[in-house]
Image 1 (cartoon, rainbow, N blue to C red):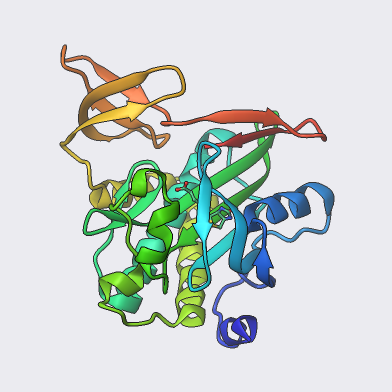
Image 2 (cartoon, rainbow, N blue to C red; image 1 turned 135 degrees about the horizontal axis):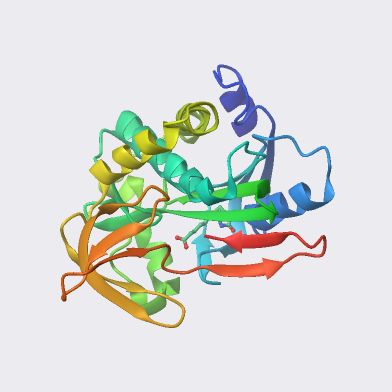
Length: 277
Ligand code: BTN
């Protein structure tokens, strides 16, 4: 039903042309990675959607609570971009989510670097990027997007670490009004393809995307502390580097680039480097 409703008028060439929908799934991300790893016919742009996830994955090995009503999806990509531009895929997805939120709900959203989408300073969406590399080539990428769409936030709060009240849903921000998910997804696919095309086809596509993300950053000119695996870094946010890193001015006046708050790497059975950024 959801797939037919999206498919009818979808204006993309790649993204969402093939959709697998499951009412219940452990994790769309794990399934998408499995398909990309084991199925040489996995088509770039294929989307895996779930009505709800039993073991949704968040960043840094966290759980992602994914009840019915949300938009939980992963997109398999075989991108023709260098590995060091891989992180830009995440920003392309973030811009697409912001566009879809704005056009479908009229709500203004912001980006919390590196990959959260906020409405009124509360997290409404998380983005996960897994990249498998071979040398300097991206073998495949899987972008996972979790949007608290028609989720009643009170139902997920008890499961969130420390009962983090800075979480919201589109429905909560719309005072109980439901979002039409097929129509939202259709637009999300179209906007993502727009930014993805930029990255793949335009030499300066990455710069355009970074500029747009910079405009949406909620932390520009703010003092931040970035938690890394072995240390924390503190500084004033000056902007973004060409690779998507955060440019911080430390208290001693020096400038540093923070690549990512939480990077982990693992080697898959096919000896790709699978990196989550
Ligand atoms: C974060 O920690 O902020 C990232 C959360 C990403 C959640 C999405 S939901 C769809 C996809 N499948 C998963 O298991 N995780 C991602």
